[in-house]
Image 1 (cartoon, rainbow, N blue to C red):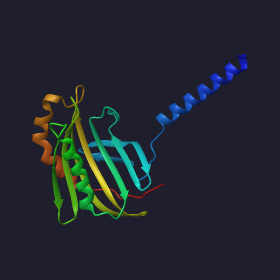
Image 2 (image 1 turned 60 degrees about the vertical axis):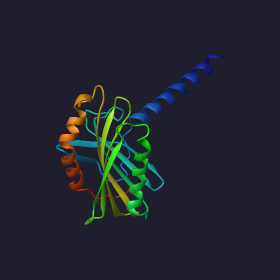
Image 3 (image 1 turned 90 degrees about the vertical axis):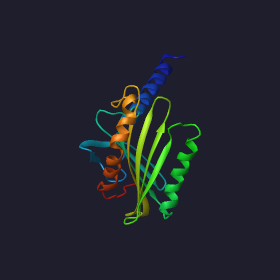
Image 4 (image 1 turned 135 degrees about the horizontal axis):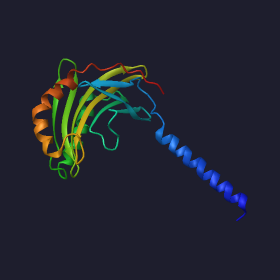
Length: 196
């Protein structure tokens, strides 16, 4: 192979590698005009986002967490739709019900706020030596792009090298679950302004 062809191939490889690294470390797109949250006196900043047609999803973590091995996370989803909120929440409940056959700790409880029309679903899941508790708060909203459903979610996990050790997960959950549910339920949600 001519020497200049080798140089061209090496140059193309370097360019592609640099592009891949740039994409990996690129700042996430802020679709919902929400940069960060302060929750339970801790700051969560936008770390990942994705848009798919009328669905926008953003994930927020603390500075000492990573998306792969996070201890705590806040999620904001917006789906532009006119679907009934109760039907939408029921689909998530059905998803958890299906997991019960393979997940020994899978369980959930639904709370409906009759005054606001909101729903709060708290549920527990596991995957081997990883336990995860979630509080999902669902609300109908009006956005600059039309009607939709807002999901505000808080999640914390326990695994081998987590802040909350596996042996302490269930005692912690038993002690703090209701306080966390109330915090999520009463959290002042930010206004959503969608940016495509």
